[in-house]
Image (cartoon, rainbow, N blue to C red):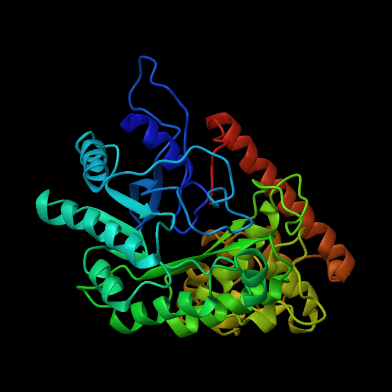
Length: 410
């Protein structure tokens, strides 16, 4: 098997791992500038907002586990391949010198046992760092069940580690991935948190949950994320809509992945991390799943109309963040400006605040600028859904103008 054939197989096998931001393209260079390749490239983002291009591959798609949802499970009849450490170094350096990438995202199927797999990954990255003096960004997958010694050894070589929780509940793991144990995954996360430093995983850790393969509610999924953020100081939880690549009686029958649900989880996750929300504010026992037609923040406002409209000139920072259409930047502008003068609606417009949704939930100097007759649940729901549809249609139109990438994966 040629190196290019291995690359095609092992980059394609890695595309379902969403624990780093990724995209792919099949554009060909026709008398233009630049190239896009169907396989192997993804994008991550640094703390200062820079987009970093990564080579995203598996060391091997051979695996001793038989996870029901996984394309690479041992019971699947498919082409298998394995890179040698030198081959991974060769590809990484070749792509880097051509300015295709700035770093590497390396994961792997489990071969022989977790420790053996980790040892081969460590051997590979040690070669890159020590023999070839590659100082680019490296994100590696820590293998649950491997020893702390090996996790530490890998962590000093890479910038970021991730240990995928895979499914939101232990029952889901027992049913669909019986070879994987939740406590083994959490042991890795705990070890990384306790040892993180400038010399060990300086970019922190992430994890991924598959959404829709098992029967957990959105509330259960968010509760799991909230707990992991608190206990393990994760940089990010990635949500991956279940893609039906296998047939199994234990798997749900889906025609398309639940991408809208995945999107709502990302929006809610943002509320947890940056808006000061708690899971029980976003979802509760009476509303355990998202309203697919409304973003979580708007849905919260509709379910708590007694808290609105909020006076822009008096609301504190976290109350401002609860207003649909107002985010952290806008809330800070409001608080800063009102120290000097009383804000009116025209002032909010000058600040660049989107009032298409916010106007229904605010007062400016005691004035309500939407028709007071509209402050009713049914009317607000219809208007907010309409605004969201317009926004989505506009986004889709822009994508079509620039060439929509059907291989996008969040």
